[in-house]
Length: 191
Ligand code: GLN
Image (cartoon, rainbow, N blue to C red; front, side, top):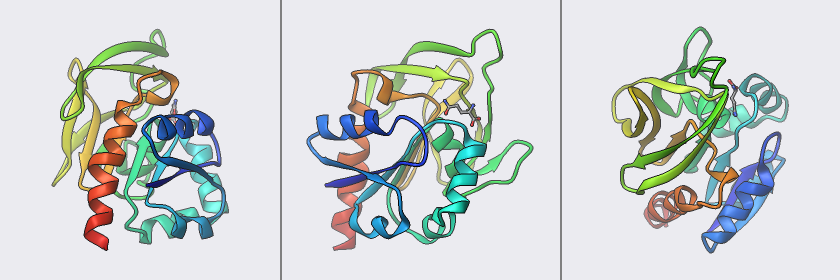
């Protein structure tokens, strides 16, 4: 599989490394024309207001709203995929969820937690950096993991979103899941 990583901001190289560890080809995506060459897309973390502005600027909003590419968003990437952002307008409207930005409080700006992620593994290393959480899921979106009462991983069909940064650890199982369980079956369906 050929998996793109939106390369406007964030840990692009780290995501590409995880794609390669999963046994697939990773490519940095800087222009919308490249979208037709990939099987799935990862939206990295960073700062979602800046990310949205850059996506507007380079034409990614329209292109991705119209696209049926499987997508995986981490942290700010999750925010960008959501239908609803508390206090702001939703952006790509792919995941039927409501997200709250920066929701773990100042004292715990960043933390790590071992996560039980349904369908993936009971011991996923979660690195949270000024992370959002998913306040509620609607329709077909299903909860894959929580930290206490807060939802931190969801899937809805070909869209996967997590509050944390798997790419900043050696644990590439979430990326592997995205490719093997979401991108591959979606490709088979399309062909
Ligand atoms: N706090 C950022 C935002 O709201 C997300 C942080 C991240 O991606 N690490 O956009």
